[in-house]
Image (cartoon, rainbow, N blue to C red; front, side, top):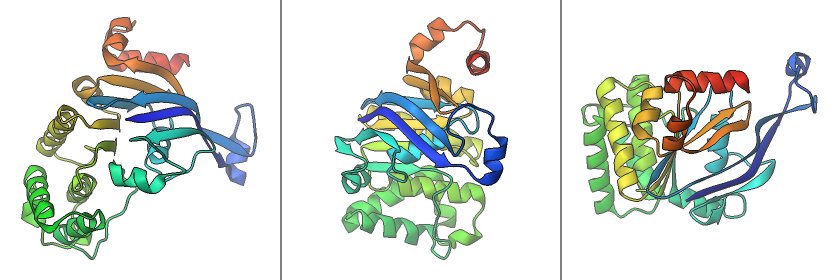
Length: 255
């Protein structure tokens, strides 16, 4: 489970950004995330939806212990992300475009390295790796150096790295970016399977089709604040616009 309470993350503005800032408040800082609260439950998929620069990636990086909150708290699998960051990392799998891969390694070497890092036994690691490589279509380039791979291939390796230790909490920042249609469909199927296995899943996306296919719960974030937080089914029932996309645009424009 993930519990987020009154979470804020502020960043110091550069001189150029200070000149451009027109919003009221502290002229030296900007709140990328501004006092948000929500919870993600096991066996459900929580979708974080918002325009570019809304605070989605910052929120997910905070959950994954890659950033420290300015205020508020986050609990993942019963552990505090600041006081017990090491425990959180053992229970979480995090995928984001900003996490790098070792380009001199092959996908096989990379996944073996991360599996051992998580203390996996050799037989279990081999089975998990084979299953993920087959699902993601990595087998064809498993022996090539990552630095020679396309962006889509690298994304597949990143996903395998995220899942190799079978974490109970999964955090996906736009997981289908750069993937072909077939692999993207496989990833969505995998996310559903994680829900069926009772895992806690939170993901961000800008693709409305993924929102409608995967969401149990939904939060809309804009300028660091939540415009909606609740059941996806309730959101659909309360829509004033004719489509999910139009309703999303309406709420953002009226904020």
